[in-house]
Length: 176
Image 1 (tube, one colour):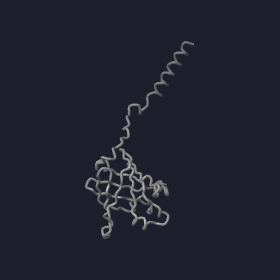
Image 2 (cartoon, rainbow, N blue to C red; image 1 turned 135 degrees about the vertical axis):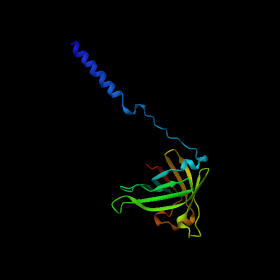
Image 3 (cartoon, rainbow, N blue to C red; image 1 turned 60 degrees about the vertical axis):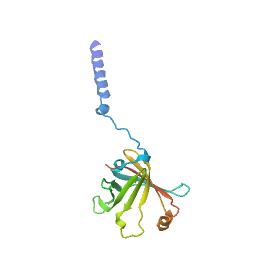
Image 4 (spheres, rainbow, N blue to C red; image 1 turned 30 degrees about the horizontal axis):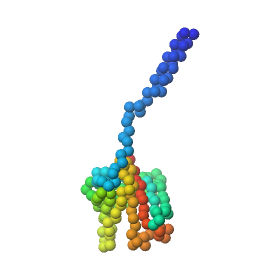
């Protein structure tokens, strides 16, 4: 009986030691850091951001369209804010049996307080081209929410299902 109790106790100690010591016990996770949206700096944005979702609102702040970003086997569109004031927007496709960049558009960007201004270089022949202003609604170390308010002229050019659009919220996370 004594041998049985000793062996049982030994087995119990080994089992407890195995369960209580796992690889992730000593790993620390970096907490999500909220960045004050009134003092957004270029360094806070200079990352590769992957589109997660867009939400369109009418003038009464009612959601009129909401789309989760999904692109099958390929990455959803990405936006790179680069150090040299360049911004690159990529979309991807799977037409050739592998994921490839479908479209790459670039422009210039700047940030002041919580407003990002983007000048689209792909439309240089358009004399009416304007900077597009995006309001940084929220920003953490890995997530970004931008809001764009649409002008009356821009609304006139959109499709019928979005004629009531007033603003668009765009959600991003760090691309891996």
